[in-house]
Length: 211
Image (cartoon, rainbow, N blue to C red):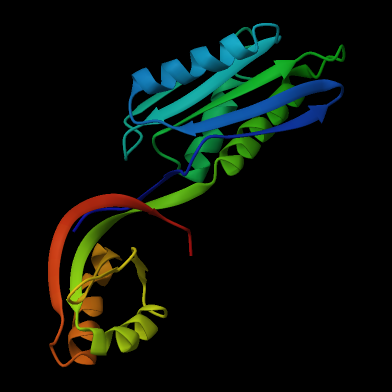
């Protein structure tokens, strides 16, 4: 049985203004350090005129790799607080960059820490935290006479159904969390009096919204 983990659904960005300083929180899912570094370079290039582009990222389901940078801010006021947000949210395989445009008002160490913490948090949530769960593709086929009955029940089952194909019979693929596979298969077999073909295909990690 595989293990689930949290990551980001997509790229995201949000911004806040604190004492006239503008903070942009960027976040994205990444699979490797190379991807994380490429994202950091991209944001730094995009905001070459910014005061600072601080970052934090984790790689691996168990956060085996963790890197962060204050990018010239006082030590411990940016990168480390951002990493603490990522660790608290338990988000793996992600990279966050918080860009700061200085507004002329000094924030002090405590103010910077809070600002970068918030900047990282809004970036992560803009990118949408999702749970990656071991998921089985279940290839299914039923006769036309059973399709309406099956489709009705699938609507209330813990599955994602892909577009069915209507040929000599109705063929469709179900995405089922590995932990639900036995229950879903048994329900479909019972529902159709065993008149359904079920074939387990690949097992992959896929995003499911947090329940």
